[in-house]
Length: 254
Length: 254
Image (cartoon, rainbow over all chains, first blue to last red):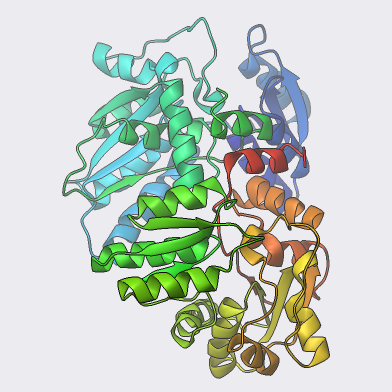
């Protein structure tokens, strides 16, 4: 299989390939967090680095797929991937049912939109009254803009976000209509808000959360949602963060 | 209530007092981790600092208890505290039963011995075949030495351990006979092994674990237990670690 990913999808595909005993080539940005590169390599995958600003990762993937007869596993714009992400929504509904409470609000990090498209589909099927919201990094608020415009629009920020996992320039062709149908809205979280959420997870939840995984918590802590008397689920979608960055965040050097 | 503690028991007592609406005075070492001081204060307790090398914290507690008519809640050498810690053992047995597996080995951090005394009592009652081991910091291996000697002995190391939560000089009067009866043995973990365990928890488990909370994991990763074909439970008993120390550990500056 061939996949391209900033890191978390990369690890998932590499592990799945290892478990199935098939070779995997993962196309990752050269400036991806070292922990993501190491972990992907640790699952036995071959890594091809690309330049985020110059190279076309989809073209590289297509070329490798053709020359090796491999299948491309996209990071989000794929029915199977979306369905797989749906299990997160399924588990949220099951867990709140087991607790005997109604799930009023569920909040998800949004990059290309695979997670929120899949999870919201499961939630809306099982618990139609649950409101689903997405959160993007401030600079990569393409899904929020697309929802406003009523069509997919792309952003091209001049600088990087703290959230390496969520730097998708536009929602997916498949994910966007699902998001339009299921999601009440998408808000943005700034880098300082994301850092504050990582510190909260560190100090209070005792969890290591990477920037992209912390956007939903960041928006919640920043007061962007009505919480009073509501049962709220937020998803922390990754904990792969280089020690140097994590140290900067918790020591408030960032 | 009055309690003395390096920090984790302090928070427990402070929170319990807050929930019950009664005042709490906590006697803590002046060099306790800031996060533990802040958290204890955050639960509404009054904090009295003492000098670890000079003051007698038990005497301070007795004096406050007498002058205010308060009850002393000891950190480990107390039947109710030991019984409360027993719920950890109870939950471990219940959780492994729910998974349909037999618990072969359970490993606990050991300071004054309250946690392992309580937990091992519950485990031995419900699952007599489970082996229980303890782990101490290398410099504070008073329980290991006491088991060897067949009686309580005290240590007086020349320097501090990384594990601020486990610097008890000797096992408790009540905890020691329980440990003698229930525990297969106690081993030690060095500061570098503890740091390595904290990095493992950070990178792989995505958990923030404080030094004293990581000793059981440290001993396990250092190969001190036979793991092959066995179901093993280890307890990570705290995550209150100052950001500056956590940063040093994950960046390998320590």
